Length: 368
Image (tube, rainbow, N blue to C red):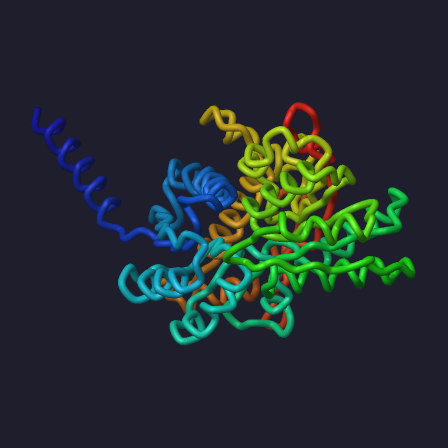
């Protein structure tokens, strides 16, 4: 009886000690509600898919990983406020998957002041790649790289009159620059670049200009809801040419927003096909998603890869794993994420260089 009681006390003390170990706290700001929430929610699902699997096997160094999310409704001012609270009040160890180009630009002074790593910002903005930002560790491909690949694909499809319709902000400008560069490599140029306001994206007003331009393909750059509404306006006014957009809209939520207009829309992708079992990263993510009865999506792949990078850095983190310790671990990270290699150094925080093209089929699925 005494032995059984001692074993029980020992087990309880072990649990209490484990529970007392502080978790690693990872902070996120993004639109988790409202019209632009679909991609953000899928990113978070993908990240938690991996974090949950790690926590189920004891976490990292006996510490669980917690993902703290603050909703910013895709508003830059709220992103800044959220990140300030995550850093100073929640005392997070790192930031992860903060969404939006102007949003990430706006928080750069905050992360520099706090000396905190921003891992896998959910944007391919070149400003976060070049010149190297000390505390920013990109995972996804730069927008200009995928835009160049998209332009090349369209040219290979025989499209000669390509019109660009972009949101008027740093994100739209970044993608447009990549498209122009990609077409220039083939001695081509867009027949025009039309811009729309980020806060009031009324693309319907630009349709007469589109009709006069007579494009044979359109690249529409913006947040998912704006792009879906823009495609709807084009179709309703008789513009039936193929439309392409970039990877910020690689989510099933975007497909749902498109509704009957989804079939045939092209979307560039920056992670391997989630359905290809020959890619270990996709196979691992798919296995974990099936356990939770979840349908894996491209956006979830991005979140999953971001979480893997975070965990690998935490595992290599020395000492108490302070923010400075984690920074040093990230700057020496060389890891195979599963058929996809990622290497950082103090002078290179670029991450993965991968781009592909998909098309939405009649079943509402991305097909490569």
